[in-house]
Image 1: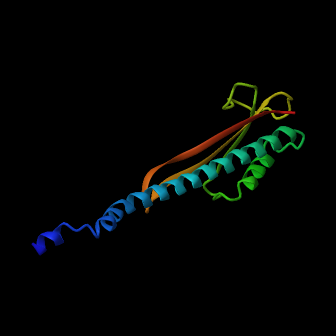
Image 2 (image 1 turned 90 degrees about the horizontal axis):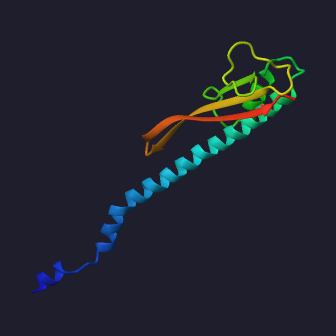
Length: 143
């Protein structure tokens, strides 16, 4: 009779359930943190593309064909790994991105396009769930 009472006790039930659910909770929490890092990278890239497009749109008399815009974009994205950051600056007639032929940096009203790319890996416990490239594009009119 005493053995039957011992088998019916549930003293450790909550601990066992917690041990079963804990890895799932940790994986979800780490996924949320990784997604937050990727979203922060995207926001940094979007701001950097805006800075670069503004620099290119207002600096048409510099004569560097967008080099200062690339530098401004990279400076604004200083939190990101610069060797992985891709920056493309072009000046075209509106609606013709990517430019075909010669770029025109001297005609007011042309469209300056700054495209920024950066790779990402969504990792949970050093296991890559997904990976790819984040891309953001900003356009402004040449002043």
